Length: 336
View 1 (cartoon, helix red, strand yellow):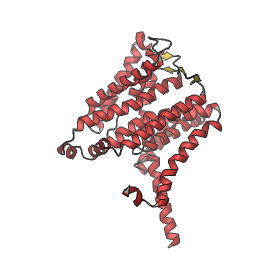
View 2 (cartoon, helix red, strand yellow; view 1 turned 30 degrees about the horizontal axis):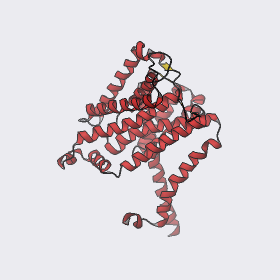
View 3 (cartoon, rainbow, N blue to C red; view 1 turned 90 degrees about the vertical axis):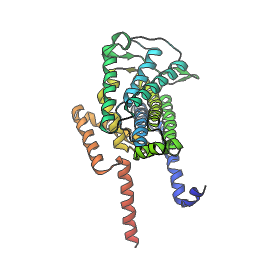
View 4 (tube, rainbow, N blue to C red; view 1 turned 30 degrees about the vertical axis):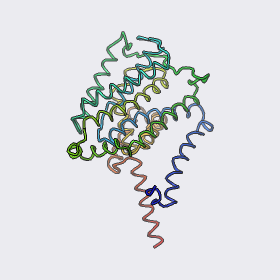
């Protein structure tokens, strides 16, 4: 309470008002947009942002830059297709209330396993281990035709009818993704101030010192991977429903790198950065690719990524904060 009182009233009101206005804008967005913008832009942005959010949790709070978050999301997507109803490969026909939790649970277990493999590593070694796991999963689903249907993948993966609502419709699916994105954002935002979150940030800054203080560094890293795996698992289920199919391209190297690009472009240290980066990526992918072609689109994304890394260590959010500081300093000079 003392901390809240120490914040100026205007600053506190702005801090509390901005998220509310953003959430309200997202809530009324389908009322002013057509189906393309609701589903292709809005829904896809929230899904990719949710998967990038799982990477932000690991990299921003734990200092663990991985390439396996799309792999975890892809495993969840494959499982919801295999356990539910799909065409191609194996389809067990489980009810949705059993298939979805099972898919997310397996994603959490796989993420924890990846965390255990990479817990003792840092930097480039963590990236290489998670890349190796991702490539192994890619070739597993590509070469296994009996279960995963090879390169054709699994099709007709659609959300179920629940409470009489057709979740396949653009507006209903958008609100479903929005609810999951808000829940994921709130969880990660709150995590930073918990005992576990503060310990994880301490491990990010100085793992040796945290170990000397009695913290189990490896267990914290594995637990962080499991939490991130749950977020990525939810994103994977939504991604399968959005595309209505899942294929080896879902867990390919391009998809893994895209998640890293999204997180870095938006801002790796803030949960909002994941969704901001996803919005930029989806908008460019939806419109710029028609003007410059798919090959030059990769060049464009690479240039944006390079510019972000060179001019801002915290992505577009860092640039925005820098511009605000510069504007504030310029305003102070004019009034002085």
